[in-house]
Amino acid sequence: MSKKSGNVALSRRALLRGVGAAGVAAVAGQAVAQTAIDEVITAPRRGNWDDQFDAQASRTTVAVVSNTPMLSPTNLFNIQQAIADYQAIVANGGWPQVNPTVKLKLGAVDPSVQQLRQRLMITGDLDRSAGMSNAFDTYVDGAVKRFQARHGLPEDGVLGEFTIKALNVSADTRLMQLNVNMQRFQEMMGKQLENRYIVVNIPAAYVEAVEGDRVALRNTAIVGRISRPSPTLDSKVSDVILNPYWTSPRSIVEKDIVPMMRKDPTYLTRNSIRLIDGNGQEVAPETIDWFAPKAPNLMFRQDPGKINAMSSTKINFPSPDGVYMHDTPTQGLFNKLMRFESSGCVRVQNVRDLVVWLLKNTPGWSRQEIERVIATRVNTPIPLTDEIGVHWVYISAWSAKDKVVQFRDDIYELDGNAQLALQTNIGVEQVGGSVDDDILPQ
Image (cartoon, rainbow, N blue to C red):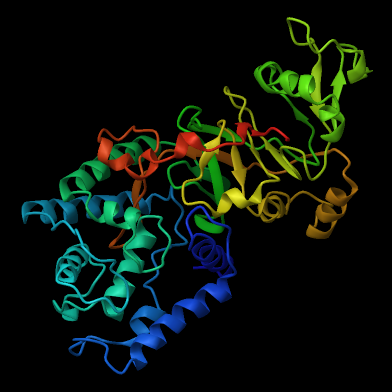
């Protein structure tokens, strides 16, 4: 794994430690976790640990992230191997359900830990040499974190609601999910991939920048909510726009902006939204009758800046659905576990890193120059000089590393089993503030 990929993974673990809460610093998160481990180790009476306690087991989670790209041909073999492994698991009766009556985390002692150990051993997250103690020791802690990493969950080692639900998805359901995604891989294997390309895996809500069949960069993303799904697509990046304008769709003008102007006539001015007529001339908001039956037939265009709905950057490419990738002023949304909140476009965390990668072969656009232009707040389109593909895919189960199988929620319910969308069924459609790609200023 590259240094950059490691930093991204570490950042995500720290940010997601409290689901739905603001992110915390990675170093602070590690310190708190290690303090908890040390307290258990040094406790005068720590329960029936047998000989199953190794401090290193909790300090180091087995890496599940790979620099092999999502669309690499080698992943076809890996998912075939995963299917064979899960067929054997199903043939042997699957795995037990884990239904603890107490909160299971490091230091807990409860009979349900034996079921947890068995469950984790069957999928290779816990080595069988760890035994069947009732103690939630550091071996179990490390195994739970590995399981969480494979399922896109916060790696905190605690059996919370979402971890328990993921553990209790049956083996035959997971096998079905692998088979469905195997078909998707087979369909994609005919694609001619560019030497440099971007992949957005929609269920995983992340972006890969790929060069020479290696992941150069991974970025957390926000993708379309269930009612406005992000489409699958294949295209090529045409240009990057620094300090983009945001033009409001007609639906938002009618349903949101006009009602706001009726309540607060300063709304457009406060949010740097200008009215532009068909001749490209600016129209003063005070000349408009905002109580008329129909909204004015004008362009509502927001100036570049920090409060712009696309913030610093827009990545353009031809698309039948008119979607694109962009920055966002609401960075806190990247801290959430369920990042399905846009109207179809993809918001990219640390998008400037991706822009630097996109423009590295375009003369005159160093990191320093990109930052300088963003600081000017001047709208600046930059055509790319090299070919970079864009591929948005829907892969909810895959293996980019031998014997490491990744699963994600079937957010758009395309895999054929409602149980695979269990996590996403809670509260996703109740998220406020996201009315388009993306954020309507308040």
